[in-house]
Length: 117
Image 1 (cartoon, rainbow, N blue to C red):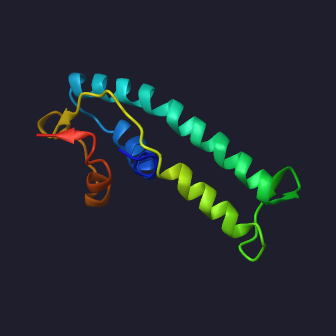
Image 2: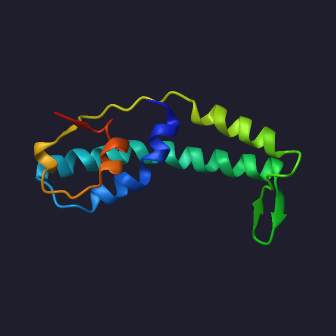
C-alpha cells in the first residue's frame, strides 16, 4: 500500500468506526487504527515542514501560494512522500462482520484495502 491510499482513506475509516458492527470487526478495526495513526501523524508533520519550507508565514501558520516559485517544489516533494510504500500488518474485516454498517459506495471503494470476503 502506498501512503496516499492511506491518507485518502482517513475520513472513510473514521466514518466506518462510528458504525455499529460485530465485536470481532470492531476489535480488528481498532487494532488497524492503532497501526495507521503513526503513519498519518508522520505524514502531517512532514507536510507541515514542507509548507514551512516553501510557504510564507500567515498569522499563526504558514501558507503556500500556487502562484509562488516554491509551489512546484512543494508539490513534487509532497508527491514523493505520498508515493512511499507502507506496510500494515492487519487482519481484514469481512463484509459479513460489517453488514450492519451503513457506508457509501465511495467509502467502500476507498476502504477496499481493509475489507475481505
